[in-house]
Image (cartoon, rainbow, N blue to C red; front, side):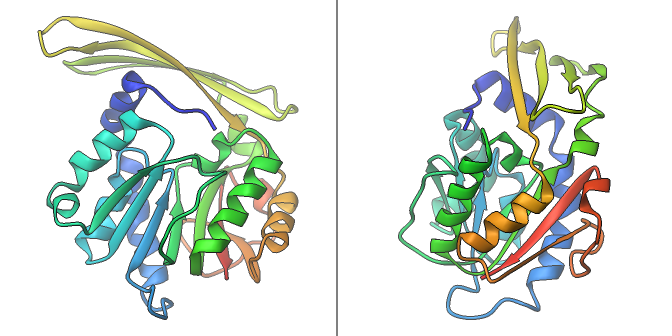
Length: 251
């Protein structure tokens, strides 16, 4: 899995925080009436990024472990968690989502903003599912960009809305292959007031939804279905038509 550097971590924290704010209420509303067992209050945020989603669960009284392969992302996550990290209710682990083990169990595992699309191939995704099944007692909720959604990556955007950053995103996907890419570059203001250039290319793997479903059942999950962020409780019949599909898996 690709580990992102300090420039991308800062841009992620500045530019893409809104998704966590939008999706957190839906995840909480789904899980709260369905959690059970001694691990009910433990949440694992897989590929937690800068901790923006974890913060919402922490504020609602859950204990959260965040896991990510990017050390710069985790530094932001610890800052975001604030007192929750200092009191031990939030913990952050530097590890690969396709090869990890943890010494506790979780009632809920979440992974959002197409984080699992960043795994290299279906084998890596399958390993992720197996690792997660070994630590989860309840639910695994994650989203994936579909092939239809990744076809939208062909645009160029220049964001000059902030005084401390200029962010340029340019993506590409031919609609047929198994990889999409997005190049994120620009300038970030440093502490001395000068601007530093950053550049990073991120990749999304295209996963067929039928293969995702089969991989979950092969790795220890008893049931799984596809849904939308607006209605996580209701399965959809044609997830490939969605730009972003949520997967709801149960142990």
